[in-house]
Length: 76
Image (cartoon, rainbow, N blue to C red; front, side, top):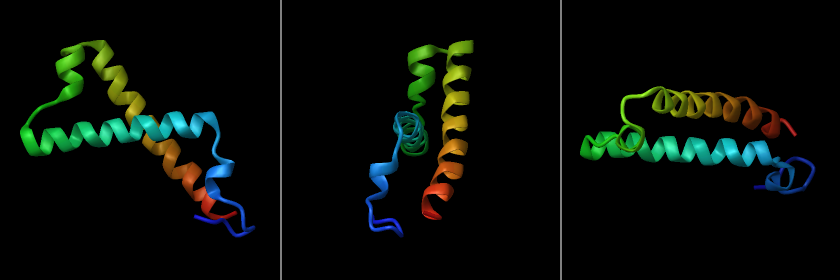
């Protein structure tokens, strides 16, 4: 998509934006698996541990970041 100044919005993405997007995407895929097949891939990989809670926390924080950053980029 083009921003208001005629540049591609993707030209303004930072490395942090890309990492956050990847984590949000992985979280969405995981929730899709939970909804469709009752399979939690994060728990399958990490078990019921602090690591799985950390991954869930990173996905949630990435989603919050993506909302804020997306709003900033949409205003440009």
